[in-house]
Image 1 (tube, rainbow, N blue to C red):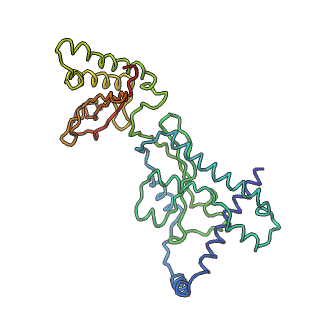
Image 2: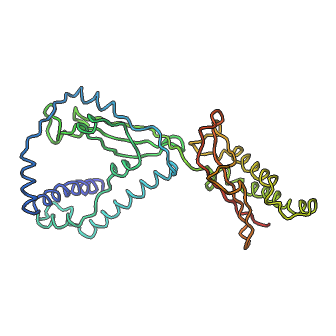
Image 3: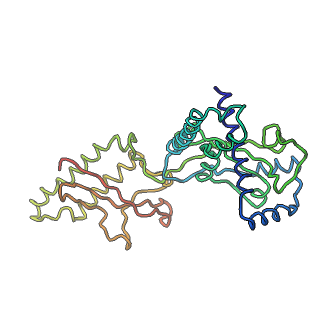
Length: 329
């Protein structure tokens, strides 16, 4: 079974070489002239010794941190699901066209099937859209960099990226190696690397099964107790504006900020040992820091807040809003 899968991948890899060749040949006359002219130009290649290659390749570093709205497990699951989807499409295609992996298939038939075969999952393209690396003119021009795999790290907020680096023979030349050796571990112009990437979430940790979520009923009960003070407030003041008072808003915000601290709901990019939760009061935000909307039994409690650095108040987040649906009021 493994040999069969390997042969499928080899077939697919060969496929796109044929397709590209066919595309280059079939074109307009002017396009063909340009193609011939362009490829007739001699590109002066720079010689790279194996030592120079390794020195340059070792300087290429994948960033060890990634700020994103997704968790490490979300990114990994997305990677795996996309890969499985592509593999399933190829498996279904081979079942429908078993001759595609046959050694006895004619060249004509093979080319016909290659045109309709599904594309193999591009690991490098998928990961390149999400992760970054150091780059300079020399790296980009003379080195080929390719992400090869993504795995879960040892910690919940970590991922392990695998990559390979080769010499780019379009612009560089090196010591002679056969085409079978190039871009393989047997090559002297080959480097395999790994990087643990810490995922720094931009979002609060109140997703399902988080500590904040597990204590949501307790938090809502505390909010409800403050909301119900409107009855006592009316008796005391003969007014119906409890929800518009600073006393009400400050009590609600105090419960919210304490819960954020107690249940460590701070985003990774604003850790609680460095930042604090404060009311979002700004000329750009005309809303009160806390609003209560019981209309049509919506029972929505809205809280406007932001994060401010404990030692430098010029370092702060954008304004954010959290809404709670308070039941039983």
